[in-house]
Each structure stands twice: as C-alpha cells, then as structure tokens.
Image (tube, rainbow, N blue to C red; front, side, top):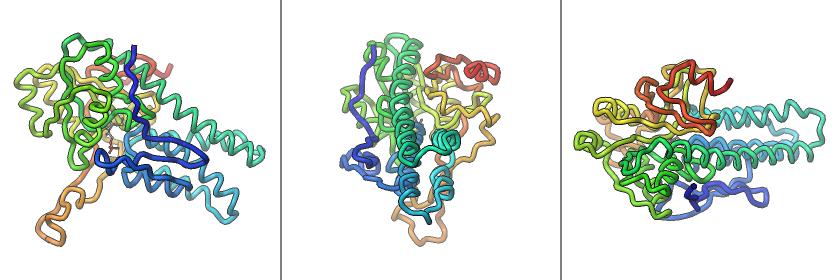
Length: 343
Ligand code: MRU
C-alpha cells in the first residue's frame, strides 16, 4: 500500500515546461514556464527545480525544446546547447543520464522526419517522467519493509515529491512507511544554506498530513545521543560503483554519527542515480556554489569574511546499511553487490 503525494513539481502542457518554483516555497506556489532549452538549463542552475531525478526529467524535456528550436532556426547550435544543459549542475548524475538518453534517441533515429523525431523525444521525456514516479513508489515499498513498527527516522535535505516526479525517494520510503503505520516520528534537518529541509521537506510532509519535527543540523548529535533515532533515510545525487553515496552536504556527518550511535542508514535512489562508470566518491565533482548563499547581505563587500560552500559530500559505502532501488535492496553495499544490480 502506498500513500500518494499530490505535490507535482514538473508539468509539461501545451509544449511548455512548467516548473513549480522551489526558490519561493513555501511562501508562494508559482510556476516558472520554460519555452526553450536555455530556460530549462537556467532553471536547473538557479535551483528553481532541484533534486537529482527532477533535474533529470527537466533536462529530458529541455532536449525536446532544444530540438524544436533547432528546427526553427538553422543557426541554432544544438550541440552546444546540449553541453550547456548537461553542465547546468555537475554532481547529480541523473542530469547527464537524461541528456544521454535523449541523445541516443537522436543518434539511433537519424533519417526520421523532424516531426517524427520531435514526437519521439517528447514521448521519451514523458516516459522518463512517468517511470520516475513508478520507481519511487516501488522504492517506497521496498524501503518501508525494512522499517520496524514504532521507528523514529531522520531525513536530510529534500528527497521528496519536489525532488522527483512526485512521490520521492527518501520521502517516498517515509510516505510508504507512514501509511503502513511503521513510523512513530519523522525528523527533518533544516539543511543550510538553502533550507530544503525547512522549506520543502516540512512543507510537503505537512501537505500530506505527515507530522514532522525540524532540527537545526547541529542538533543531530543530541538526537542520536538521546536514542531518539532508529533510521537515517536520505536520497542520493549519485551513487558510485563501490556504493559510495554523494548527497546533500551534511549527509556524511549524519552517517558518521549514525555509525557511532549504532543507527542504520538507508539511501533510496533509482538506478539512474547509480553511476557505475565512476568507481568511488572521491572521483565525483562536488558542486561549490556562491559564497553569497551563506554570507547573504551580512558581509557584502567585507574583505575579511569569506565562505566555502560545497553543496554535496561523500558518504563512504561502509557507513551505509541499505541502498534501496526500484529493483530491490542492497544491504551493506560494495562493488560486487552494486554490479549485481545491473547483471
Ligand atoms: O542541491 P539540491 O537541493 O538539488 O540537492 C538535492 C539533494 O541532495 C537531495 O537531498 C537528494 O537526496 C537527492 S535528490 C532526491
């Protein structure tokens, strides 16, 4: 049994990509409308849409929009535009994966009429979109089955409906576990500096009437020390061939704490978040965003105060109890078990 979220961050209607603008949640529910590949790429860079699966879906529609632009303007450099889209953010592998899916379609179908090719690209984007929702629901049920009744769980950042096609990876597991009455309490860390936990996770859980208790990230250790957590449940932006997990900065801190206090760590992510071409987490480019996201107005122009703003970190596979995918669960991941998922 699954508990369905009614939040949907991405819609494609009348040849327009409509993104729920996550920069303004929960204060405003505004759509940002994209008519071009460049607008879709900029929306990804600017965090209008964020979360690994959601940016992959956005990119798939972006390729379709770019193809239409190329048909209308012979001077349009489609290849360069695809590179811009692929590089809109560097860490979540779903973005490159989705662009590659569309590029493979273009290569395989050379010779098709532009109208037929456009239809194929749109169908494929819609299939990626719909498949993500189904994968989330499957992950939700696999993950929930691992959770004992009466559990208290802590999640980090937002790996929910807003980060995906509409159910969530980590929050999908939490939704399913909640609907099966396995959860006593859900905690969410606020997730600085963009506050995805505070602004997005708490909002969408409340929207679905799932109670949530927020903590500042610095409070996590106290929560573990007081034995108030049974599972840490997070999503992933990329999982490497050896099971290392790249996710929102602060995830590794929680996994280290969890190991210290004997708490289990679950990572929920679809197979298209697994990057078998990258052996381990140290090889992944970690996005560093502007210092101004931390400093805000406080120190503008002050030469003595700076900020370092990496937005992801690497949790070693050895600290992960379970990786949950749509194909099943990998307990204590390692290279052989990750490979087995694809055999
Ligand atoms: O910078 P963001 O908001 O795009 O980062 C997203 C995350 O890191 C999420 O926590 C998530 O686990 C990956 S997407 C389901």
